[in-house]
Image (tube, rainbow, N blue to C red; front, side, top):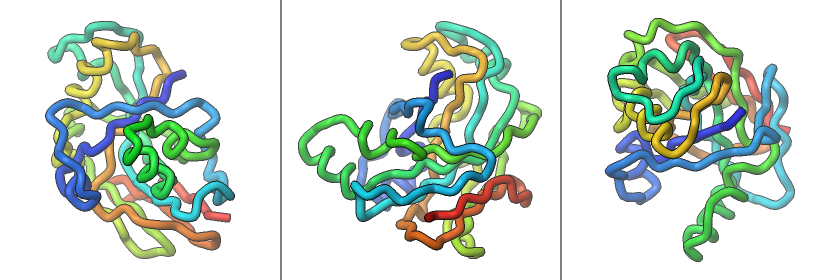
Length: 202
């Protein structure tokens, strides 16, 4: 299983971090050891002082494909989940200043919390409302219709470079409102009014 992530896929989020809006999908990956499932706690690492949450919709690849066409891409995913892309923002800043890759800041153990997957009718891909709650208050609200690159755009782009396989997952990008977490915080993920993820910071 591969874990792909799309950066800066909402214009307002790119702007809040003073980043340029990309003209093609910005892709990074996480290893399988980054996954947190079944509402596991997130353990605040000792190598960072600034961990940020980034709540987003995650899609699951449902069949194997390479060089997938735009017309066919909608048939290559069948489920969605809520995910939190935890980011060591202090480390990421240092890496970016040096022009180095982001893997340490993005792919450390436990940096990809994910809910159980929900079946979806693909025609809804451009109208999924989701929220990130921190200690019961909404800190992020987003709708997939506001993504710069749609699910199908992302699948077409990724499949140029990688063979997508059943079970691969794609974090599709976060809206504005990202921010820091501290031990004792509770993060929750909501899709279309349904709480699907709970993650305590310890």
